[in-house]
Every structure is written in structure tokens, then in C-alpha cells.
Length: 313
Image 1 (cartoon, rainbow, N blue to C red):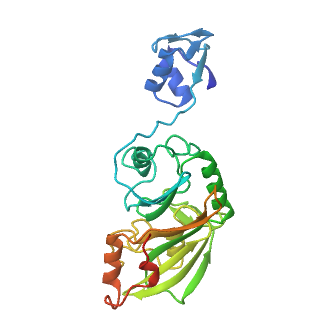
Image 2 (tube, helix red, strand yellow; image 1 turned 90 degrees about the horizontal axis):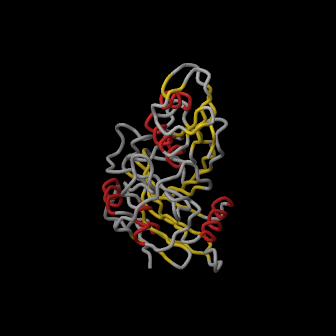
Image 3 (cartoon, rainbow, N blue to C red; image 1 turned 60 degrees about the vertical axis):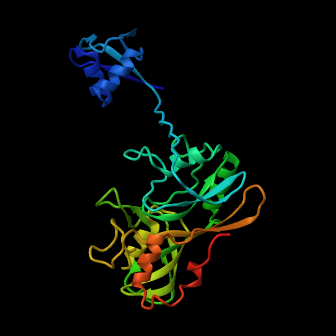
């Protein structure tokens, strides 16, 4: 709770003058007035239309913001691994990880709340159990903490870069060489605040890639991210002239035929917080990704690279 003190510079209604002074809506101020959070010259005012004269002192107690609690929803979700402390899920393409403006329902968190009885609370009421995130249009491995101790330990692994994440990506064009490293800082784009961009003064970011197969007008890569910046792979690959195929934000307008963002979080290796065991979990390629990949191959009948054929036990 914080208090805002305003001096009226004109005669008027309490809700109107307070809304202007606090830069909020009259309806919000009216709710605060109704529960006794506003006063005029030290006296509580309970009516939005209470008269205020020029020179009067208005005091508004602003409640602390509280996030709405995410609701349980019976949404099918695939678990790749579970124990008492953690769960690893295979997030589908098109699913938002946690509720936010415009996506309050149908998210992975809504599904987790229904499927699991315990989730860590460190991430807040809208992000219970969420240790790291994937973009809406990226599919694959996502790690969930069932308690705060596990969440803290896993977050430390992310920070210390002892958690290893590999993605499979189909990128536009033929890459030069068999492997490479991209070390370029990433920041919010100054031209479009909804996008990220390589920019001086941005946060350090490092992406390593390895060619798995040359395709028709594209390349299949194993991508290992050393850091975990927002849209890192998508921005870094665009910066070297090979954006991820099917990318609606950073991709080509007339690139290869792709039904979706061709980016899949394939494997995740980490240390189990309680036992110290090193675990590696893999999410097989989704069918839409796999079929799009097959159509781009020069020789569809030739066996796929071994990395794409392993299945979870």
C-alpha cells in the first residue's frame, strides 16, 4: 500500500480530480473511494462525487497490485519425466507457457495446475513451477519445479550455465561450414518494442550451431544455447542471414514452405536437485515438424540423422 497526496488546483469531484492526479481511470478511483481509501483534508470520503475545492488536500491509499490466480483447466499434456521434485513436459506448438494479458486461459500453467498437485510458488501465482520458458510457437522440452527448493536449485543451474539445452532448427538457406558460434548482444529493438535485435549495449548472448543435414533451400541444425535471452536463436540466426523457417516475426516473407516455426526444444540435460543425478530428457519431433522436414530433404528415403530418431524410454 502506498499513499499519494495531491493538492486540488480547481474545484471538482473527488473521483475526477483523483483520477487525473494518479493517472488512472475514474472507475478504479471509485472502487478505492467506496472502500474508504480516499480522504479530503484528513476526512475519509465514501462518495465518488464528493466535492473538492481548490486548495483541498486529497490523500489516496493505493493498494498493492495482486496478480490474478491462474485457474485449473483439463488440457491434455505430455509428461516426459517426473519425480517428487520435478516434471518435464513436451510443450506443444502454439501453446503459451503462462497466463498474461490476452492469454488468461489455455496455457501450460492452466494445464499443470490441473495435472499436478504440487508446484513451486517462486514464480508467482501466474507462473507456478515455471523455471524457464519457451516461445508460444516453439515446441519441446520444458522443465517444471514441484517445490521451492527444486526451483531455486534449477534456477541456479540456469544462471551458472550447467543446464544444457539443445534445439532442432530448420533455417533458411545453406549455412557455410559444419558448425559455428554466434556471440552477439541482444536487446529490445529500438524500432519495434515487441521484437528483439542484435544491438550494442545489449545483454551478452552466445549460440552454437552444428549442421545435421543440408536441405532444399534450407539447413537442419542442432542449436545449443549457452545463454537464454528472449528470442535468442531466432534473432541470432536472422543476424547471420539464416532466419528460422516459418518465423512470423524474424523470418523471410517468401522463404521455404513451412507450416510453423521450425524450432523445437529437443533435449535438456540438468542435475536432479535432491539426488545429484545427471538427467537428459528428449522430446521427439512433433509430426508437423517432421513432415515439413521430410518434404525439404533431398533424399526423403534416406534414414534421418541419429539425433532425430531417438525416443524417450
